Length: 245
Image (cartoon, rainbow, N blue to C red; front, side):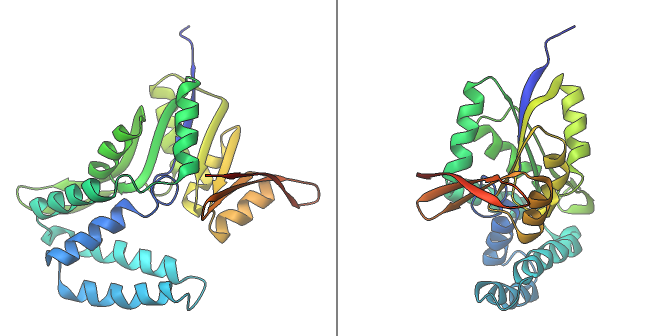
């Protein structure tokens, strides 16, 4: 029997990339005037609510508005406009990553781990980004293409990451023993739940609750300090380390 390789799975948006690949492309398309102007008007209002922290779900509402509106207008989005916007994002922002996850990727690569990126952003964005940072396999959302426009059919990958991961483990002959997964939001809970070393990185409150309930490591990168928190007794967390970037 062939030797099974250890793996580490990473979310991309908000975990390695400091923003969202999907969101940045949406911004570029709005600047280009490639989408209906009301999308810019609606997202500007929600973006302001998020920036001003008007309520606890402001960011989620902003994100979901972008997703829902682009899903809605997808059959009217020119493929050439999308590819132009995607190229601009990759050229201008691909280096905008977190230090902790960038270092962890390099370390695990040196240790012989098979690196996997599972993202809810489009695969056309995920593939060049994952290649840049040395991933061995990647999965991203798929927008079906017509001749000039997208058809509107979508294969989404922002949830069900445990099932996506299981398929990749089988395809590439990997082992869950000593496996890692790193994510920042509730959509990453599935893949964090099935590995030996789950890491909740800059977690949303929903992911924080899962991490506390399951005793997962939490790591916070804030300004130029990286804090690692380990599960203590009775649901408490202890500062395991703090390092300068």
